[in-house]
Amino acid sequence: MGNFQELRVWQTAKMLAVNIYRITKSQSFSKDFGFKDQIQRSSVSIPSNIAEGDELETNKQSIKHFYIAKGSSAELLTQIIIAQEIGYLNADDANALKDECRKISVMLSKLIAARSH
Image (tube, rainbow, N blue to C red; front, side):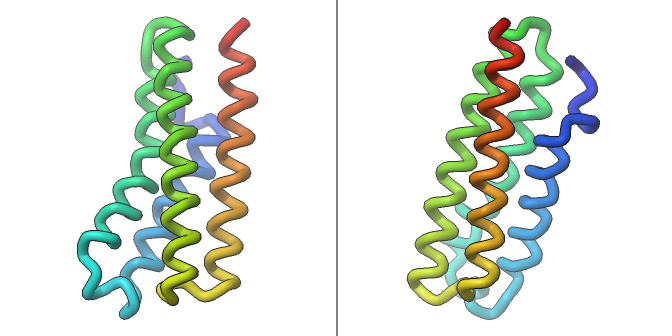
């Protein structure tokens, strides 16, 4: 605990957030400020909650934040699906982002299980 930058799940989630910011700079997101803000917030919430959880004193406290990060991953996955369906994301970008969300969710489940013992 306390060295979140070395956690692979944090590294993956941080890169996903960076990629979301890069993608939402595109023309398709430029005029939809509410949706752009929401998808960016969801993406940043994932690594932020992983970091916060890893810095806490007990596994019980940490696990709570890891579950919040897992929820944010599902929220982001939903927003990516919507962005694709309304034409803001092409299929290749959307599929890559969805895969990352699913990967992070699995990694968080494993981290939660490891910290539960």
